[in-house]
Length: 359
Image (tube, rainbow, N blue to C red; front, side, top):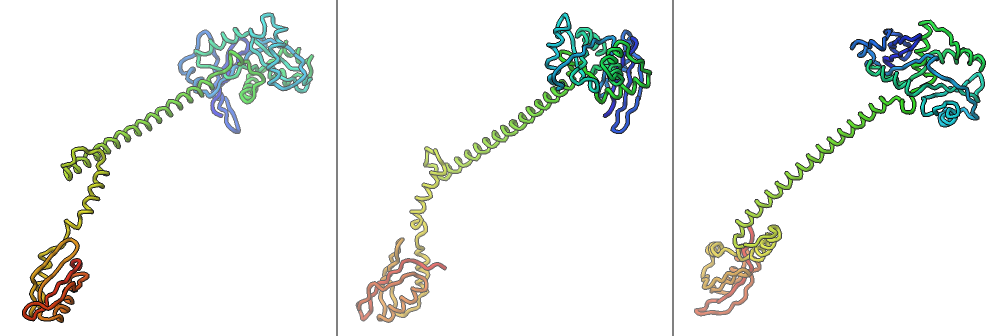
């Protein structure tokens, strides 16, 4: 679909048709007569360059033909064995020509019609067309299409190849449109094969590979930048941790693993926790001062990490029990460790407790 250019060589002249090929209909946009010696104006060259595809039709007098008989009608196999067949016909061998073949349907399908042209001749023609912006994808022949459509036997085919029917301009345009759909032959084979599509694909692939490579470069550059940034952040954090650790433990001169050494210090502090926390003697004395027991004298108070020991005198044993009850209000595990008569009818006592109750 889109614009297609068809260059038709007829009676020594070149006529170019620009077709607008649609899905349901096709029409001629422009017809241009070309003088290969004078060339084309830049506008005409742009018109051909704007066409998606271009085709070239050669007259029958520029081509040579041979009818061959082969035991198969697979075109792939036919093209594979044709060089061997042409080597027996062409003096310079099949390598000096470009060729194609057509199965003679409706006549004798065991026979094919081989069409060929000197490679150098077609190459020279294509090189003359290239400056005009014309690079035909297919090289075919309108007259051959008309001959194969008209001939019903091998004898008639031979006669028409020698004296092809004369086609008017309208018929030539119609055949040209048909050739853009399915060409009767294509002589752009071998060394002269059409490569623009391949080159375009190669360019697309190269650009794709380049873009993918650039994307990978951007991706890996971003990844490298992130890694470097994270490493710098880690190094900065480690430096901050080291400085903080050294400020907490300036006596440690050799620091290899701050976290491990900090855990070791925490274990040491845990062992010494009770020594740091301990029992507040002032609080105990304040609580004892609030006791209101007549005849109570406290003569000794011992406080360490594990226990509190009170020694003194009361009027009687009942007061010792009363004292124990009041001490239970703010001390834990209070026990009477000693109670005996003392001087002047007093009762000497000793009480022990494990610590102060939490409030």
